[in-house]
Length: 423
Image (cartoon, rainbow, N blue to C red; front, side, top):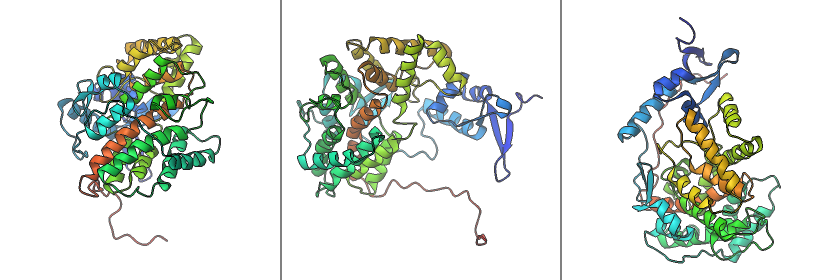
């Protein structure tokens, strides 16, 4: 038989045989198209390795089989064996929609400000006209710390440092009562936003959070439709169940870390390239599509390099991400966003012919950042500031649970004792 008929085998340092699958074999086992396999790679659900002799990518058979079993369970609504299930009253994702405390989250974000969405997540009560204020001492400490960072520091670097600095200015940070945590929530988010270096002389420190953030993300003058789109994006991204960063926040809260530390834990995970940086990849993709005049050659280059297509596909949605759907509708009214929006549609249409994947929130966020003169990294800032509301909502829930319950049991797979002392 040929190599194509037999899964490839390699050996690791321990000499154990490791089965490798070709892209076609992995696709057949998963019941998807080959292009979708690369989408799994781009989302961190599979790892790949270039085949010998410059041939296509290969995949660990055990990893592919585990993903196939997990996907099958998700389609049937069954929990995966060994998966950590966490009781939460915050976000439900089902049938290509998501809800915040039982309310359609997209509809909520489209009709309420980010601050009002955050209050709903935290308290389950409507707070019309909610406003957040950064205490002068917290903001001064955060700004001085951010200003001391090297010029090449990234957006998450600045936000993490701002969170730590704000904590040092708050002697009540160790009070984990709901009232105190809510007080921290309403001051930390504006502190994070206003600690960022302004790109406009008139960047405000008061008013709606989206307006404050606007002047720190783009040098363009604020325009009502664009600021409204930014505000809605913040609300849409406020929470999304137990994403990796949110799980880190709940682990920190389970150990009774204070709110600033829990948020810092989330920011640390968000900095990973498989989570917070996704919108930057989509931003650069759209920019290249505009420069080259079409999505075809750009997507071909991504697939040829063994990568997925940034901005397409989401493991929790079979159709279009509802966050993308809501934001795309608003972006049609944003002056200057037309070219980026057309590029995104080209990506979606071209990708659909080959992968069957739909637009996700990262692609819509990339249209917002590219279409309003923001940098590729601005999407990370928007995502992080937005998700801080959800992180604090999850921390509030976790503070009410048994301490240290987020302690999975390791399955030891090393050499059995006793082993001799190393020489």
